[in-house]
Length: 291
Image (cartoon, one colour):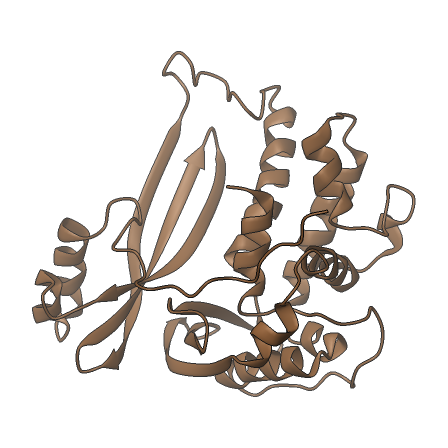
């Protein structure tokens, strides 16, 4: 997947088009739904300080450590240069003093500087809360949809630490963090990150599994099913979340009132490593500016 596509997917729900400084004081949100709404409001106000206050500090720290490793890597090449440039103005000398929130802000700012009509595009969006899925008492997925531009439902994953709810980084951003951490893990095992030990001979240990996290009813004829796909390659773990639409014509629909049976039928009929029916009629994303 092209890097621009990864960052665009991340930012379609939670993004900025704002300066690097300023903003209101952070607020403490009392519920996962209020976190999702608070992030969206901060985005529309272009208040990045308020936006960052909603992100889980543990995720921001993980991002920071991954980016530090990225700048410390001795490899060279165009792909690595482009990835590092996403975090400008930070470099190998200054990245250690930056916070995770500052690095995230730099990355978002740099990506959206390449698009011509982001501000107008975002101004027409409205946030719709479809419902929420409680995975545990301290982890809740808020299922949202952006009206006015994006068709597919998305999950905003919130965690509670010390009594405060915060949002985790979107899975697309974690894909970048996971890739960097996967490279670090592979090198620690004396393996090539592109060709894990045993991959060519079929001896490498790899596993991909998918399961249903939960679902919410969007309307009388549409349910959003949240699925997690987990990937294990030579001891390194990664996962992604995605919502898939379910309609009355699907076999699993008849078992919505029976969670165990629903999961059984959904796995058998719809779930193949997390791949399901694609979203319908997605709107066009902002056009990228080419020099």
